Length: 550
Image (cartoon, rainbow, N blue to C red; front, side, top):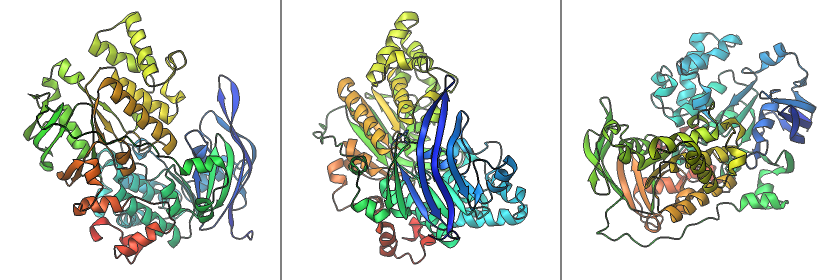
C-alpha cells in the first residue's frame, strides 16, 4: 500500500477507562490501516471495545476514558496529540460518525434539516440553503418517505428507522473522507435495511469514502466490508479480507461467532380451538389524529406461547402493542384479557388489569432512568403493584435479579451506566416481571445486542416462560429470532395482518407475496448476497433499491 493511498494509520492503540480512581485497560494495543475508499468491518461481542476503538479513530474518547498509548494518524495528522482546534476542523467535515441510537443522538428541540445543515454551514462547506437542498437529495437517496418534507419534522415525529437514515444523511453532509458507522442498521427491519445498506454502499463508492463499519451482524458486515477485524475484550483476535475471513476463520473465537444462533425452541403442539386466549385482539382499527394506522387487526395470544409480530417499519407492530396496553385507544374493535373486554384507555383499567400486561422496550439505554439505581428501578413496580415495602421489597428485588441471572449484591446499587447492553436489557425484563404479569410485550428486545448476548436473552426469556407460564408478544424484524423463539407468527404490512399461522407453516412456501419479500430480504453470510439480490429484483442502480420498486 502506498502512503498516498493510506488515509488512517492506527498503531499499538491503548485505551483505558477510569473506575473508582483506578485506570483499567479497554483496548490492548490494536493496529490497523485504512485506505481511501476502503471499508473495514469491526466485529465482536458486547464489551469487545468496538465502539471505543471506532471513536478513537476520530481522536476522541468518552468521558472517563483516555488514550494511554499508541498513535492514530488521519491523512498524516496525529489525532492523539493534535490541538482541539485541529480536531474541530476535521470532525463533521472530513470525519463523521453515525451512532447506533439515533433517538438519543438528535436534539429533540430542533428540526432534522436544521441539524443536518449545521456542519456544512459551520465548516463553510456550503450555505444553509444549498445544504438544505443537498440534505433533501440525500434523504431521497436513502429512500426516506416524502424527502422534500420529512426534514422539516422534529425527531419524535419520525420512526426509529427513518431517524437512523436521517443520521446517515447528516454524516454525509460534508462528503467526509472517513465515516464511522456504529451499528447503523440495528433498528431497521430487513426490507428497510436492504435500502439503507445499498444506499450506504453506493454513497461510499460514489465519493470514495473510507469507513469503519461496527456491527454484531456478521451477514451485514459481509455485504459492506472489504476486510474484517475481530475483537474480544479489548484484544485483537484476527484480521483478514472478508472472503477469507468468512470461508476460513483461523481463531476458535471467530469460529464461535460464526456458529451463533444455534438456539431453537421446539415447536409446541397446536392450541385447542376451545382454549380462551390470554389476549385477544378483535377487529382493531386505530389512528393517530386523522391518519388511520391500523385496519381491522385480529389475532390471539394463548397462555405459555410466543406470537412473533413481524413487518417493516410503519407496518403497525408497535401501534398494535400500544392499543393492547391502552396507550392508544382504538377507534373500532376491542381487546380481551382472559375473555373479558378491557377498557380501551389504560386510565380506565384497574391496577390488576394494568399489571397483567407489561412491556420490555427496545432501547434499554433510554428506557431506564439513568439517575436511579437498579434496586430503585425494579423496586418501584414491586411497591406499586404488589404493595411491598422495606425488607419484603428488597427480598423480592433480589429474587428478581436472581431470576434474570444477575447477582443481587453486585448489581442492586449500580446505576444503568455501569451495566453492559445485555445487562440493561435483563433489568428491563426484571422490571416487567416485577408486576407478576401473565402477558409481556417484547418490543425488539434483542435488536441492539450482539448475537452472543442476544442468544443469552432469548434463552432467558424461554426459561422464564417455561417456569412462569408467561405469554409473549414478540415484536421483531429479525426473522432469525422468529425461528428461534416463536410458536405462531403474525405478518403485518401497512396496518393490516396479511398472514398468520404456526411458525412451521409460515417458513414453508407458498407464502403471501409480502412474507416472501421479508424472507428473501434476510442477509446471508455471502459477500455477493446483496448484489445478487438487487440483480434478481431488477435493480440496475444500487440507489434504486426501494422495496416498492422491487
